[in-house]
Length: 357
Image (tube, rainbow, N blue to C red):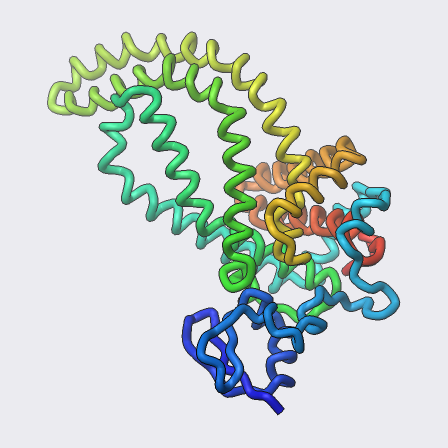
């Protein structure tokens, strides 16, 4: 029986372990096709996918097993589906209610990590803000894009892990809160690239608005920042603020029509690519395949998927109205509803969302 040395997510070596243990770790999600492994006696580590003896174990597995084997990409793309918006929302509520600690805990941890990363990025860039506001428009737009790319390095894999926790809970597969970090160990590069492409397209769509906003409102914000230097002269500071304030309304009003026009393609692309990240982490496909699969399947019933997104956002808004804190409890329902939709569209069987908890 062959033994293997494994490089874990912490970059430490483990083993030697038997082939049976390797298969067990694959089934538990601790190893993926990209994990670095070498057999005893090998000189170099290779991706686990390069070991033919584990090809079968690496295939996507679902709890339905032999009755509902995993579908190929072509089988998914060649079928149709019916999306029950009410059933998806109801399934999301039941999933949260029946698995509150796991579903809510995973969501909160993901949010806190993203907030911490955003805060750290803000602290790093804060000393540059006063220079950026007075810089040429091109530099300001470029800086905004750089911030987005830096944020994607964390948010892409984190979103993938969160979606995986929700999907495994829906399928009644073993999972835990720690699996929100699975995206950093599995398909990291593909998750980052998938989110990068979506962000890049959205950024390109918003460029006309960004240019108009920076041209009209940017100089006013720069002047507003310069007023802070007059803190020792409150009367002069108040006088200049009084003359500056009336200029904001017309400046912003010029931006609103451009914003509305830019949002049309942004919304269209966002809906079409809604399932890119879960496809990468769940089906283990590359970002190009995931983008194409999500686009083709959503486009078949674009308005239904859009309607589900609108309802999910309305549920979140209701939570926001409930003393703001309620949004922390309603947003997981919306995410779970989208994962029920994912199961209906891409799963090995057409789950009944209201029976999925």
